[in-house]
Length: 51
Image (cartoon, rainbow, N blue to C red; front, side, top):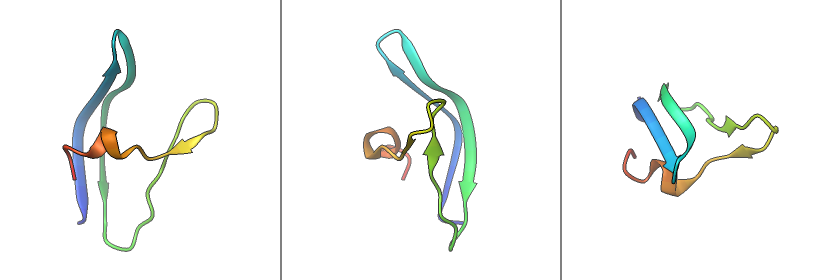
């Protein structure tokens, strides 16, 4: 296992961008997140406290 995230929540003021997301990334896997509008994005600021 490379990273494990449990119950991740990210807010921008009163807007909840991510709510209660959990996942595990294993060695050799490629991981990305896709928003409802189809934009793939991995924000270092979102995961800086996790990784």
